[in-house]
Length: 188
Figure 1 (cartoon, rainbow, N blue to C red):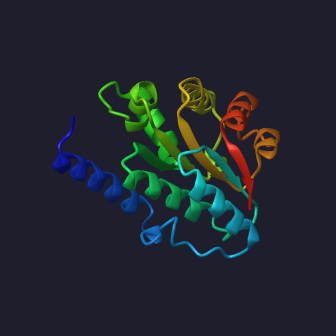
Figure 2: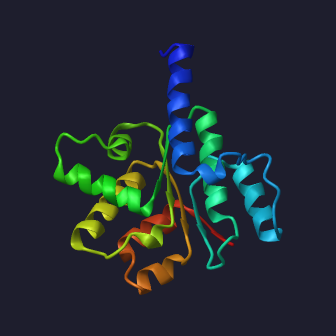
């Protein structure tokens, strides 16, 4: 059992990392967000009712609030004491590569997906993973497959829907199927 001061330190570290990575959204609060349109209002209602659920938030329009919703959901769970991590595609791939190449490297995400009872990964702009090398495809598949098999949670944003991600070669169909099984799709 952790004391209250340890819990507060852990929360401070989580929030510091979140704010450091997504400074543009420092003041974002799921309960205080004002929707820009009906789609965002419906999405906010869904996220507020089920903040621990997994979502795939997509839409080709820039500025429609995908990342803002992702960060808001992450903050909501972090403040509630849930174990969360948030990464851009670049950060996620870099962490997975470093974990593969350096046995001394500690990957917060790989540790959490392999051992935590509860964990929610927030992945922003999944379509920007970059060139789909065999390593990247395998690393992303293994991560998503572990989340899927262990029944953990994930929220993902993308400018492309799952079918377009597969059709353009940015995602393996096996990864898309698992995401489709785990996540409620939200089109903005």
